[in-house]
Length: 526
Ligand SMILES: Nc1ncnc2c1ncn2[C@@H]1O[C@H](COP(=O)(O)OP(=O)(O)OP(=O)(O)O)[C@@H](O)[C@H]1O
Ligand SMILES: [Mg+2]
Image (cartoon, rainbow, N blue to C red; front, top):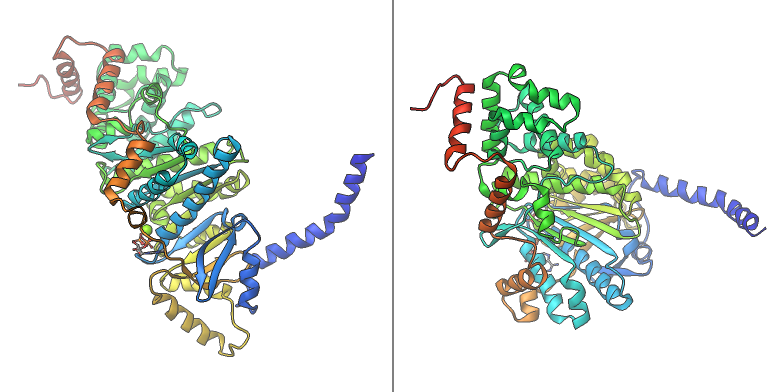
């Protein structure tokens, strides 16, 4: 009885819901510049539970979290204020979630990942450290298990195996992704046969929980007895491939393959952090499942740029892989610095990300893309992003951004200029915006001119130097996130000793070398 009533009432609402949905969809289409009052728009943005990081000359602009927690784009030339804005929003969301967790005793209801190829992680660290210093004992307690830091500094590196196998994910799929990451980010060319060998190699490594490093790959390829011993437990086709390897592949191809692997792993920081067996990271109990992850993939880290890219690639890929199985009650935001640049360097990742935007949205997971402009990003991909975002903010920007925003701009009812005049004027204004001035477009409202609210430097508010704040973050909040290079090296050596064939001391290298030389037809070393 009850349920039929509910169904009846829901039925009554159906046409209304359909009409609302239709109106919403229509409002998303590019419409001519919108004539409404600024008051109206500002009021519509503040639907309760709001954050205020923008202002007008005479008041704050409060924006409901519901509107902000959607896919978004932050655009503008360098120095406009993209990072400051994203940081303020993320830190406000984090602080609220921390307080809620302290009050309720429940786990943090938010997950944030910052993927930064631009060396700005230290700014996040400083602001979070300032919150920590001002926090109650209970809040500090929650904070101490909330963070994971991914970073490569001389003081310590984060161990981050490329991709971690997970239930429901075939080894072949992971192998394909790993091979893709190596190929995309490696400086060398990969022919079809080298690419195929790489894929097969990853399959083999994954089946045995091995890492991807030079010595391991060389031993597998040059020590036939060892290679054959590994084929016992492999699927038939893979076993056959590695059993008949020397018939299937020319020695030159194998040598060329080894060279590429060695180049990729040339930096011990890289080989030790991203390619080691995932079981090592697991056994160390790194806080990899902490809800807040700061990934410093910047150029000041120890990693060469292509490897930093591989890491960003792996992190984004992990995010996409986890989307389907994540708990949609927990809000997730991934902020990617220079996202469009990153994605244009990694075309296959670009497509995967764009394809996943809908799925992510439905699992309460949102991507905030930061970028200088849309320039150099394929038009269909820009359209795809624009279709899927809930809001966008543009600081000083060129005409490609003006082109997108102009049709969305709020026009004051008294403005009688022609559309062309207004458009030219808008493009000129956008191109010369001073720092912190921006155009904010929150769908389905029209876009308006705003300024980002002044934020004081955390070292001014706390009276503690920036360096000290960063140290507090590292020491108090992420003490287990990194290990020293020496420790990583000895863990890897232990792993090799336990898993690779033991040649008499000093011999292993020679044997591998000799087999490789004979593969290459070079005979014995002099
Ligand atoms: N809301 C703000 N309050 C105070 N200062 C700000 C604010 N926004 C920006 N700034 C100042 O402008 C500088 C540049 O801002 P920000 O780093 O956010 O720019 P960006 O758009 O991310 O630039 P880039 O493209 O170089 O990363 C900041 O270091 C800060 O000094
Ligand atoms: Mg920035």
